[in-house]
Amino acid sequence: MMEGSSSVTPLLFRNLITSLFILAETSISSLTQKHKTLELIRYVFISSFLFFLRLLLSLNPRSTKNNESSLYEADCSRRNHKFMPAANAGGDDSDTAIARALSQLLSIVNDIPVSSRKYEVVRSLAERVIHDNQREGVEALRQVNRTVLSAAFSRTLSQLEAAATLEQQHQGGGGDGDIGGLDTGHHHHHWVARVVRSVADVVWTKRVSSGGSRSSAEKLAAELLWLAETMARCGFSQESVRRWASASILARLSLSAEPRLQASLVKLSALLLKYAKDMGENEGIDDDTESKKEQQKRNEAKMQMQMLMLWIPLLCIASNGTDVPVLSVGERAELERVMEETIETLEEEDQEGVLSLWLHHFTYCSASDWPNLHASYARWCNASRKKFLIHNS
Image 1 (tube, rainbow, N blue to C red):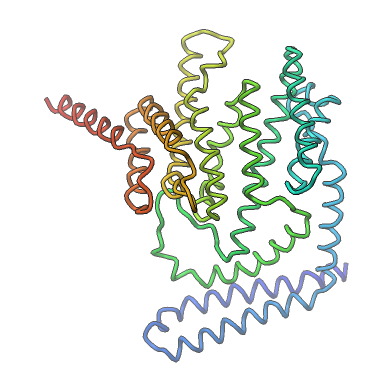
Image 2: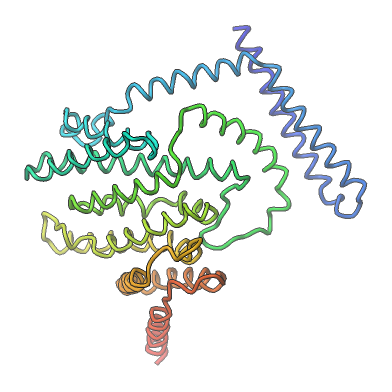
């Protein structure tokens, strides 16, 4: 009991001092703009405060050792059980030997580096298991593929978000890109809060690194592309589309990611935008009632709009690549056609949102003239004009 109270006291003291410091700094921040002497005192004060925080952490070595021990135990537990699929993740079919084998193979593919001579061996084994499950023509085995591959896509997507965040922190970036445009009006007033939070970010970065993360963001993006293509061949591309349409964190991080990672994400987004357009054509619904069909169309339209709103900014910013364009001329033309046809199926209000976002990023990104959605924008303007005239006639 005494050990617990002694370990908590420095943390409480540190939090109290942090709150008082931020309050005091905010009150004098306006004065420093007029008096250079106060500006110098302010920087000395901040440097002393950060040194004081580190000193408080060093006063509690027992807590640090306990944290490292907990991280080690958690990592060992993860390595011992990561081949097991989530309990009851997809019904009884997921808790079978073949499902566990496929889940283990896909998990190993995530973990081992591409440079390892075992990487292609494990990936080939996974592809063979998936192919054999589909070849049998049994619905239960098809559901095994669907459940395990969907879980693998979600797991890889989460790992990619974590890896992208970690790489940006190593580079000194915060991943503060804004899907709807950057707003830096309040950044100056809150920079001290970001400095204080960076102390916690350093601790978090060390914990992630000590957790045994070995996969780069670029590698994970390539594996997501492979999983998406594999899921499409198995007939359930909508599973990958649904998850990509909700990956708002990764979409925000992608705007300030490394060019090579951006290129991989552009390729993946292009592929999944095509799948989103064709969604529902290759897989019907059991109930053919009109209400079910309408509900399915609404769900598909919502997902397609989410895909466009999330990934159009990246397409505008990163399509040129580093040395050569990410997509070929033919691929660009095809994706423009896919995007135009997808936009045409949306409601007029949703079209306005998508095209307004496109226009913002297309005009402010001087390095790229793609995607060119001028025709869609003109059609939407004409339709809006006609609707206005009819309403006022």
